[in-house]
Length: 345
Ligand code: SF4
Image (cartoon, rainbow, N blue to C red):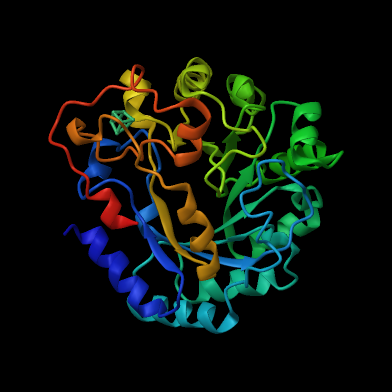
């Protein structure tokens, strides 16, 4: 067992709550091959879901059906994580997430407490709209938030506002990003859900954010529904996504930015396969979430018995139901087959 897995296992034990899962996809040693291409910091971060309200209506929202049932991580668990961190220093960073964490009125207090407990980084996952209030963004930074993981749904005002369902969302998010960009020590990451509505815009998104000096990593998460079928018709064919995704990866790298792709077949990425990073921070979330999540059944692939990829999650049940198993398109990656990923779920 690699030391990162041991660290995560010990961390999960210390958190001592239901619904905690480590999120590494690749096996021990996978981090090494990606040095310099992605932040690949997931094994050193723990993520707490401390707010389940949201004021956007993103069409691709994965938890829209469960948002009102999921319980946020309690202050008691948060305090336990802080006490453990103060004692062991096992994590580099804390991620505060859920739906829209900036709706939480005590976010500054939480960030401050996390920094006092010894987290070197506090990252928030946000739609970024509230950061347009520069006094608010300043207060968060002052409290210790130094990493902002911002969801970018489109490549311009029209597309972003249409996908998020709220007019004005793009302008506020961009104003927020530009406010953050004035702070030298701040790191910005973006997250884009790749759907049938958004995949053609991926290269344009890289371009429209090219002026942000603090933007260190762009992530492209290929959509999957939390169900066995794609009721909203949001899944796009991998073959259709591929040229746009490759172009976006290349433009990111040309601009000196890290890039991570999630939930896409590694074999299709070819020489850009090293952009696939399915790892996630260790996640603390209401166990109800996993009951829904596990319905998607990743790891379907006609070639998996012969494939050496340690990172690829294959296809979901909903993808196969929509488009078949792509057996003519996919091809096994040379190497020793390692199917331990099922055990990591
Ligand atoms: S053959 Fe299947 S498991 Fe292997 S990289 Fe392609 S999609 Fe992933």
